[in-house]
Image (cartoon, rainbow, N blue to C red; front, side, top):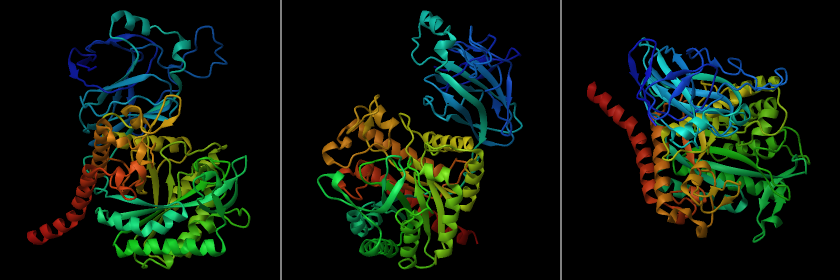
Length: 585
């Protein structure tokens, strides 16, 4: 649906356009020119600036009829379908801006309209999410304030007048699940007319999660260089066994015992196992130097044994020994030792000492600051950068959290040279660069809620990106391949390593795969994010791998071509700049 105009206090009309969104309030004035639906302003116009968010949790709070006002603690600002909030946003300087709604919402649908008439990205608020990225729009300072309408639409409503009349008079009990904990509406300054940084190249991961992968790593490095990548990210896995309370009991490397993975053996990182680990890492790092590839390292701590938990959720202090071995010793310090003995002192290296390990990061931030300090003291490299790798969501994990920890977490960000993030949040159909910009804004909102927003003075490295072609059903089961393209879009992380389950034999799925990678490359090229992205890495495993680093059976020559072209354009730019400068002189 499209806005044709919105009536102001004077008789004139201003052009408007669309966007997807939700909300409701207290008194009713019809906003005309709304196509088949009419939005009703439910409170006086509100002001919004970059420095002054609009408080939604305190304004216009209502108590359901018959409820005790002292016990009803969750305000609902939007009661009926068609209710809307009208806002004037003051623009301090020219550039691009985003609207962000912080809080938890249910299965409602919002629509965003602005006087600028800019259609950016249609988005459906994600149930139980920390924030909703409502969209980006360009604006100029000194021009009349940007007028914005946020209207609650019913995604199930038929266009008929009878159905609309029925859906517009829902009881408080019916609307309660849709709006449960709205906090604030924010105006976020993006990169402006100038990009926040130069275009970012796209590298590939080299997987070293298990000893058999570690032995084959040099072969993977050769393939990464062959497809025109300027950088390699070694995804190294340390394994651990957990008790029933999900606490680490011992560290080691996991040796496969096929065909039953439950019989795999966890060997402590000591003696010959520790020596072999060093040899495998040094050989892989040296091959990257030989191929003139920039080196990145992403260190994962995964589980082995009867208790399986995703690494984001289990609890450990990196400095506390488990059976005489602490994570800092068997993981980060072991990697730095291998780097010292295989990489020239001036070689550029980015080391993410965690990857998607939110529980330990948010629970023990001071311990991780100590880990970083110990690594800097142990390193002989001049260009070693150290950082923390985050998941795209749920970084708090499942443990208690305090404001004091939030302050320490903010200090941890400043102790890092960069922050990393996995890009696996749900995508639109078709995917757009706005999806990935929204991923970062969502993550920043989650970190703000923890008291540690993403710092603007630290680069953000995309440590993982990919779309796997598997899908999650409505009940939560992951199937290979996905049953429909919508399932691929909402769980891009879902993948398979079995050619028999290859999703890319489906032409519709292949077209979407190509479109997602094109959108991501445009996101890396445009750099409209408030955070500078120096480099990104594609998760080159199984059906997430379109260039065939490990298995050519999942390769897509068209995706490989556009990635190579993207990286070549970036590599040629400095040379062209130098040549043009010489010509000018």
